[in-house]
Length: 244
Image 1 (spheres, one colour):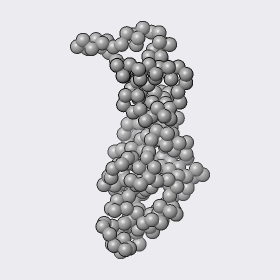
Image 2: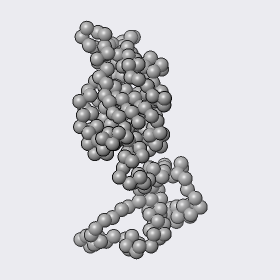
Image 3: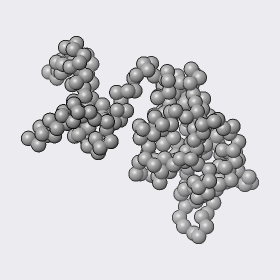
Image 4: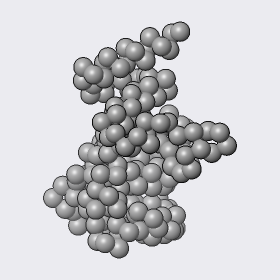
């Protein structure tokens, strides 16, 4: 995979691209990461990339020319997605991360100021994505979150191929509780089933706890979760006990 990030602050990505899972994936040539300062494509003598909006209004808008030129200077791969980071975009989630992880080439456009010239949105990008219903100073932070979520899904990026499968949201549910040594910490004990070595019972317990945690914390996720008959029976039991 190749990922290009159009940004006015490429220095924000230097440490991010070189550490942890992202750094290992880069060193193993599983992903090629690149930043492009689209100010370099400004034809303004002062290298400006923003201007006042027509019709008046607050703030400044990013002008289309440097962003179009910067994208067009990048040699595209066969499967290319150009992603505009903005509060009006589709909410980013695990399913979107899994979708993007199948692509060959992603370009993230990080905005600043009051917004973008609408022609960037209408005629250049393939996707508009948002982290949530809040506004950030710029798109760099959002781009880093999305890149992290995507890269860790690439084959071989994690030390174990199945490491991400039990993550919250990967199955449509929140992750079950997990424990490690010691078995008894200040009187707080690890559930006996996890010490039993009975893998079938452990799997059943984890599924129950995942359903329970999702029902209590994010019941909205259950509407789209892939639940079988056993799940529905456990969920009915969870709902019944929660009413007591």
